[in-house]
Image 1 (cartoon, rainbow, N blue to C red):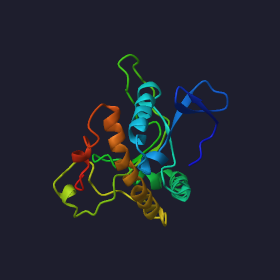
Image 2 (image 1 turned 180 degrees about the vertical axis):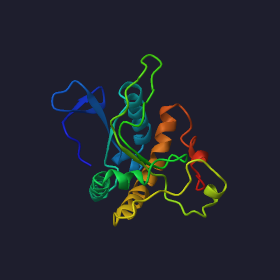
Image 3 (image 1 turned 90 degrees about the vertical axis):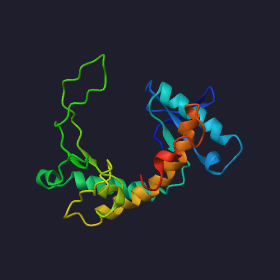
Length: 198
């Protein structure tokens, strides 16, 4: 996926500086890590730690996911959010944290210093990993395992979202050792929490 802005190097970290803005977003290049180059995993974990501790965001490049997956996903989501409000509200969020969250319906309180009293202007569609209603984790009542809600009159939407999930999940799993190392834990520290029943 391309990143918009000027690329700069500083203290061994690559940043994107957008349109002369003072904010800089780190760029994590996964090519060496995914190719298994010696030392790449540890170097990337250090960059990830810096990004998370100092910025809070980062770009990932050379991750191996084709641009067409992102393009199709963004196009499908654009179609979803263009639906009439009634169609989106038919999928309203539920107790399983699945579904549509309309604008001005949520107040996010993320700080102990600043009390937020303004409703969020974003609209959101929350979907989980796609599962069959007979999935053992769902039947056992495990959190975040309920079946997704899909729009009835949006051909191809479900398939596009599932394809995106199937592309991103392996990448997410490849990121787990980096997060563990960034936290000074063994590389396999998070593995037991992401077994096939998760």
